[in-house]
Image (cartoon, rainbow, N blue to C red; front, side, top):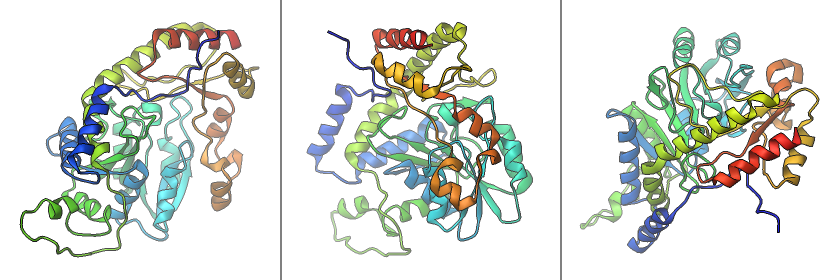
Length: 381
């Protein structure tokens, strides 16, 4: 009998998470309640004493609220890497803004800061750097770019918890806001969910208000009151972006395991590095000394002569799931047509896309699963 298929990604969920969710369900708080507040406080404390964390039902929602909160509106340009998922750019369009796509750095596949600087115009208001695969964008370089051109920075840290570079943990820098993802395949999960962190108290309050219909009081504050507290004011046309208590309950357990899960992924990455070094694969960038990569993804680039489709088919035939991160936005029909882009406008992303493949790397991987991935890669090559 053949061995079970090794999926590309799998959540690392155990009995403590299940028990926490069950307890939340039994408590009667099915929407946002005490566990949401506890999760926000614990997440903020994990980063720094002066950080405020606001939970949301997805990182996409968090990016949207952060941009809305800093005042992005019709016609405003926002620099966005082409090497990202569409959510990073689509939130700019929600507000009538214009995403300006930027090529990636060949070594890291992160946003090319020099290319970003060249795209700045009088209408450029902000930049959304993406910490691809969990490798932080250069913090000093990003800060210098933002300061030189007067740009607001909202970091897309969907891949990057926990991660750090240049002595600075992602989420604790000078950016106006950083947005984390807790989607099912991310480094920690609440099933669906996200968190916006900021040092700006006014921005945090705006995000809290806008995540729940523009109402100026949390439902939790109204419903837990022992005296009549039914009145509330709608102060803006908000959204429905709040996190639930069962999700937050799972998040609290995952937060306590986040560093251990990251260290397990780092150990898997080290095994891959050692075994794949002789194969001709170009291995993922690690960043300079002192960088803590979250290893959400392990993207390799195939050697000349090995077609990506052939490689993926060969891995599938050996029972191994793979994926591709990402199809650059300038190659996607909507963004191609919106910006009038041609493949040659983004030479690095266009070239690297043709040979990039992401291999399985998740903290619940067994030793046998890791061994099978290594054997499959070597066998296909």
